[in-house]
Length: 575
Image (cartoon, rainbow, N blue to C red; front, side):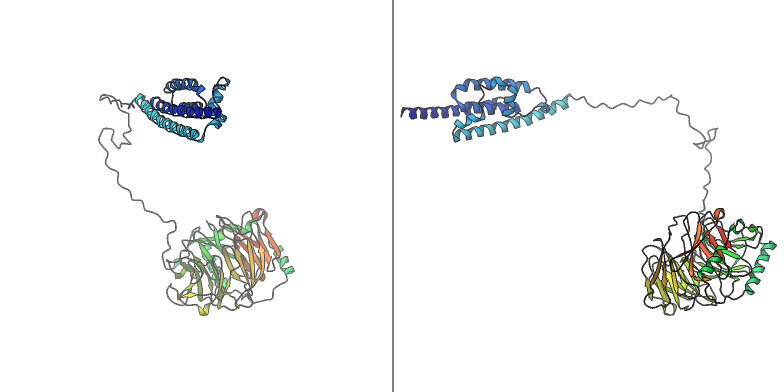
């Protein structure tokens, strides 16, 4: 009984001491300037009071240390203060405090009520410490602002009235040396000169730019070719020779310095060879709008070149008339189609539409009286040369956004094939109307931009296309129905770049199962392929052929090949 009574008295005394210590702790928090270190010490002292009454002297000593530490930290920057935990502080004080400072295990002797009171005291101490820290930081920032010197603005030096200024050019100030201002210079109006002025409408005289028009040589040239066209032999159809004999003829075609000549000043965009069997005449159309004629029988060769300017923009298509080879028809981007007449020495205007840009044309009839013209905007024009004037008979809209080439079937002339950007369409000329026309057949095998599409020249049983996906495709057009099947695909590099004219594979009129196309391979060459995709021949010229011949043309009856490059030079291979 006495033991239990002593324990009850001891617990009651400890509760009274805890209340007194709690009152003292609140007074110390209100009177002293708390810092983060102070928060930790208060928490430690509260724990010390709760352990035993013997440690009251230690609590008083630690409270005095709090006052000293707070005075010491008041003169330090807020950035230097560090919040220490009770474990960190005890580790920094060393072994000397281990006997006097109670550990966390001593709280096991406290009752739950005493532990709750200790927790409330610790939370109050932390709140007052954070409040005091924010107030001291604000005061510290104000002290720093007061100590900073005011910003000093640099005063600009005053200009001296009698000081000599910088010397300036009187010429730039437009002042006469005597001090009198010069009169204002008259305003010069600068006229913008069009690089490609339109050629005036109407017929143009055949006046060569590189030679005198009164030259007797030029007059003899016109007379010779006018008579040569009248006495030409008709091209009769004949059976195709075998590939073996065809290769023999191709091997006999050679090139020399005499058969290479500069015909136009700019890049060549179209070519044609006169069908004469006696003499050789090559026509070349340039991107500058020029048309050059080269008679290879003249020596020196420069005397046989005649250069004309019938157009102002690239000449994309050239044909000698199948009815009268003395007529050379040329089509240009500038919206004009002209006919050069050797007998009259004039370029007549066949069709003109300055609001549109022409891309290609072909003859719908064998007498060359009716033409079909393709436009870059995807439309077509039907032109009748027998009708007076320079307008078209009918303007036809198609489902293509652009038309690059137009070609008419050589036997069934009501069919025509057009090459667009990605698709190739076959139309029936008898069913064309003014509204949007749908094609009979559409070839959609091409994956990139198409350069050209042509029927085979004798029977029209094949179609060859040139595409930017480095493929030449051969289609079977022997039966034009709802679909034209693909026969052969030939891998061929067709990427010519920006400065070279795009390749266009064309048929050889003498051997319609073979195509001729330029090549990017080294050494430079012109290649011939069979419709089955087999390689047939390569025209190599050595030093005479050192550039890419993008545009090529074959003579209809003779073994003559003419190739034009992007500098206006023509290379001719012949027996």
